[in-house]
Amino acid sequence: MELVNVFLLFVQIILVCSLTLFALKLGKEALSSFLPLLAICMNLFVVKQITLFGLQITCSEGLAVGYLLGFNLMQEFFGKEAAKKIIWLTFLSSTTFILLSQLHLLFVPNSFDSSQNHFAALFPLLPRLLIASLLSFLVVQLIDLTFFTYLKKRWRNKHLTSRISISLLLSQALDTLLFSFLALYGVVESLFHVIFFSFFIKVVVIFFSTPCATIAKRISGREQISI
Image (cartoon, rainbow, N blue to C red; front, side, top):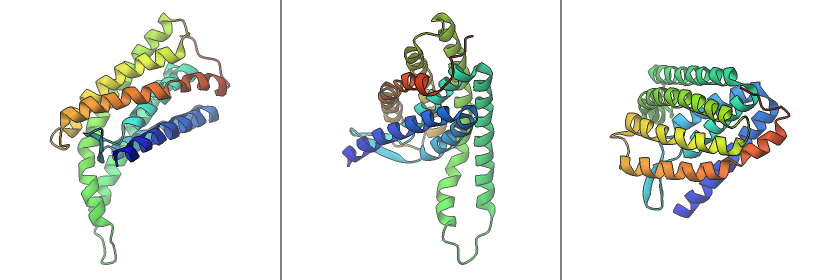
């Protein structure tokens, strides 16, 4: 069964990277819409735990890397100000989702409804997860924005793949630590397993996803923006 999870992880990487590149090809508006949606999916899917190589992890590692990959591509091709807007769009989208999900639970179901128990089992976990995600992701995105800007200046707009790889490694290490302690402490079976293997999986995802930067340069139809 673990081999199935490994296969599905690679399918997730390919799918997220492909959709990110497609959104980039469509333009700034498409990428600005896609990334907040990806963030909401990431926050929701993190409640599911799976086993890979004998360790217990969550299902959202590929989504987290895909989000920050798209975030860095937004800054690279549309500028720092556009990337800042993404941070607050993500914050607005996630906040809206948590408020609407809690309001949804308050509606009294009728005798024909069969979904309330499922919603009640899932959504009570979301406030803590989303609040933790909002806090950690705000910190991580702001640090990633600053660090990616520094690398962009330092390397004078060159070495896009290397810049994205280094930036993702730093941001994902920080995100894994912050989010795991804030959101998953006392929820998952082994927090150490989640932290250690989540970051390991993210490194694997980064390794396979960062070549998308080379493809992005070809399909974006835009010049990289200098700082």
